[in-house]
Amino acid sequence: MIRVLLVDDQPLIRSGFRVLLDLEDDIEVVAEAADGEEGLALVRKHRPDVALVDVQMPVVDGIEATRRIAADPALSGVHVVILTNYGLDTYVYNALRAGAAGFLVKDIVPEDFLHAVRVAARGDALLAPSITRRLIHRYVTEPPHADARAALEELTGREREAVALVAKGLSNDEIAARMTISSMTAKTHVNRAMAKLRARDRAQLVVLAYESGLVTPRTS
Image 1 (spheres, rainbow, N blue to C red):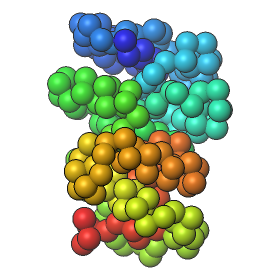
Image 2: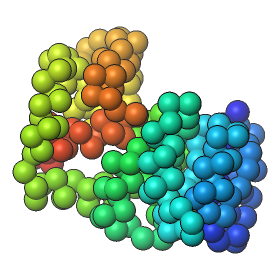
Image 3: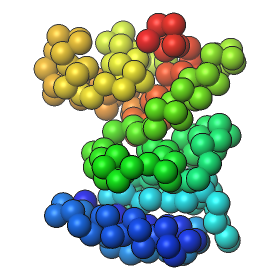
Image 4: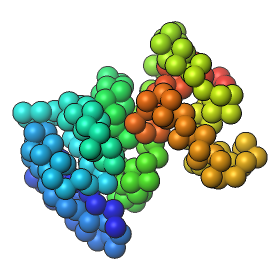
């Protein structure tokens, strides 16, 4: 059972999401919050698998709430998906750097919304296609970050290859097929890379891959 927490200051939005989620046999909504501070308290109380968090909220906004969740080792199993009406670049970048597992705009169709919850619960990176294009464009127009490039030096060649494939959106099974290794070995490469880079999840691996220049649109 995937346990979900809804954090949004608009009751109608929360109700709509809850109706969709409650219809699914494998998903349970454990609580709702109307602002980031309340959301943080409920995250600590319920330890959900997925927290669906709005960006613009009173008291504590979604980016800061995400940052606090990601900074708490006790909440390492909570995957935050940012939900907003605005697909603005600064929100995308800040949310992912704060530790969000994904970023979705609220005009997403129900089928994709439910898929997003399941993908986030698995610990996979999740970005809407329109968001991904803008995120990639940001890194095309900026030089690689020296710190990110230096961090990659800690990885083996195979680990760097696995990170590049994660950044291209491949699952562990797809990475295994591309690298001609077992799924377990692919998972090991990804997990070791996350540990060495101190990445909370696969979404942060994607950010590091683009920041370092390991992956660019021209090479992906």
